[in-house]
Image (cartoon, rainbow, N blue to C red; front, side, top):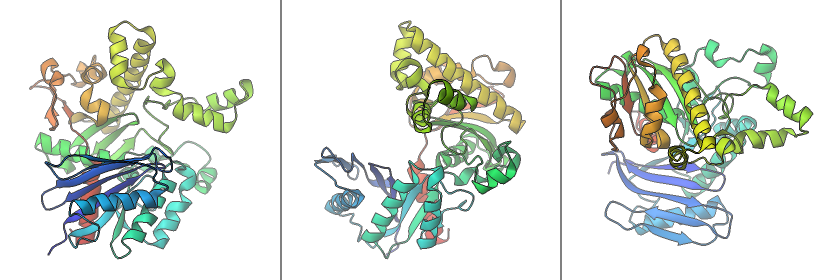
Length: 401
């Protein structure tokens, strides 16, 4: 029997998302989410194979060990247990791989130690990723465990795009440079956009706009990232749900001197109390648009700031690429918020960018063009699938494909 199943795990600080994917036909055999791990109100929502009713467990999941054991029990109840000979590997999302990890990587102790060394540049994410990996190793020590890194796709950025203009010795000593994030999404979406256009990815230039609560842009030339909006951390770049995006670094010094804020307080401000939430008290784009339509001044200004930053990055990456085949929207906001897409390209006709109102308003889960038929530069919506991208990279590594 050929093993064709990949279990994809995305371990957060208090959650575990999972999908079991059969790579023979890319079907989802099961998906689920364990939330509020470590609390008395933990829940595990499990969705079995097509046709089955979702199941929910309530009650304390003390730690990631308990959460993954509960996941294993739910999978076993559907005849999809972790002991199945059809399970080829477990693929783990790891947020930060630094400069060392630029490809999917078979996990061993050396790899884990390096991921641990990167905790200072990904303190919210890498520790949780490591916990999920170690737990999965205990459950299936005989099974290949593969790390797929969020930063890997952006490792092709040239030095002139990746370097900050600070003292080189200091930057190198403390690994201060631009790494980028959401890489599995940007890789998947840029490739799918080329397919949508009927072109070879190696001959396609795309600007990818991954717009969710976290948001990032990338310039992809011939299938390789040449620039991206996030930097050393996921804070840089676009305006996000709760993150500020680009900001004068002297704001940090100013708030310390004038407001007496500590470094931790400024960190919390810029990451958790900024962005759309900081501007108008709301980070759900649907609610923000409802308020805009009702004439709410704070929501309107927040939306205008969001779009202004987005347009700046579209223009900047157009200049970086020189020629652009498509601008593509993805992730929760990018896929579902037609007003965002329309506003983002409004006034950019000189760049060949426009949307067709009817096509833009139409929904759908398939990749689609929303630009006029004769548009010089296509505008597209391509739903992202980071789990499938992780599964594909994991399966290719373990099968030599």
